[in-house]
Length: 165
Picture: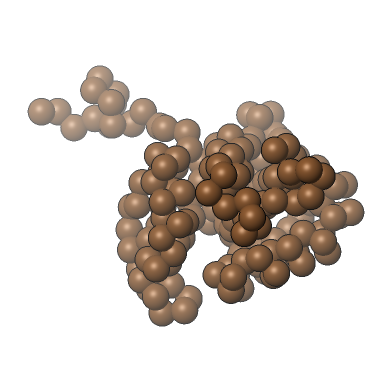
């Protein structure tokens, strides 16, 4: 499997094909808001800044020259987050590789997963993400908010924000 972090040029060239992949293999689980965020993505957001992170990322997994998965996140996931894996590539580590690459590119990732989407919840937990809240999602389903990525040290003993025992 090959992972590609898309550049602005690659995104503009492949946009139509990648959106088609999401529609075809997203199993109607991709929110309208995330899809809209991807469609209207400012290509410059895919560029890394001086800290080495980008405001948005699109990661494409290819196997045998064909797309096997795709992930997108903007503003740490607050501006949209989605992952779609081709049915033949599921349970092969493709989703984990894409999500880990997304976290590495933007530093921190938050995503919302419907409580009935067991494979996506399992993926988040397997990457060490934490379920931090639950709310009603856009379809009325219970939805968990997951967060993960770079660990901030604010709660470590000796840190100014730590609570004394």
